[in-house]
Image 1: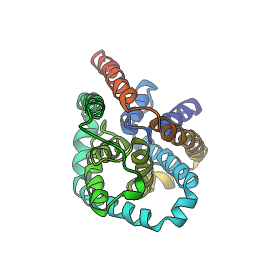
Image 2: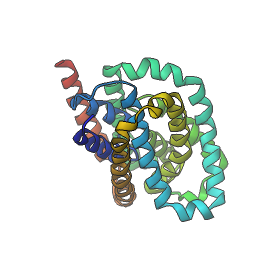
Image 3: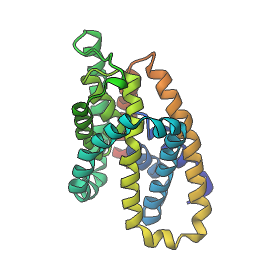
Length: 261
């Protein structure tokens, strides 16, 4: 990997990790477009830059993490079903869905259609996302974590799964996005630590590439910091329709690129 590839992948990770657009899909597509060689180092690099994005959330909400014990416990309750299902499905998802390029794109597009359908239901009054995060119940937290597990499929988006589930349960878009940030901390950290453990040999022998890893992590941290703040502000005044249309357009373009190869 070269410096330009590292910076671009860090930017893509920072933008897409917390937006409901599937960071996995974007990283895989970007790496293909940049002709980054697939291999163990790329897999480890993706884990490292994801860690940079997580650290931005920890830094941004550090005071809330220290003081709001109720929210922390409910975040743990939401993480539990995700952790169990993740442990059970990890090998299958990695072996099957991460290699199915066309299926990944179709899932990416399908979720965009779901976004648009949800917003139609909101406009018709069939869904009423009005509750704040302070009213989050233990039952709802568990259900959110259960449906977050759908994000193991590349193209779904962890943030998208959480936000849509919470909207169905009646929570506001911005509060749903906020909780998706909180829930990302244990979810992504545990997955990242497991992947790093599996890649420990590559990590130990990547001394020459340490600067690239640090650069990617730093870029991801900075970009994710602003992406998180932007999303909360955006969803306080807008719907998810933008992300729905983006998914359909970007997915169609990616499908054409894939068919052209």
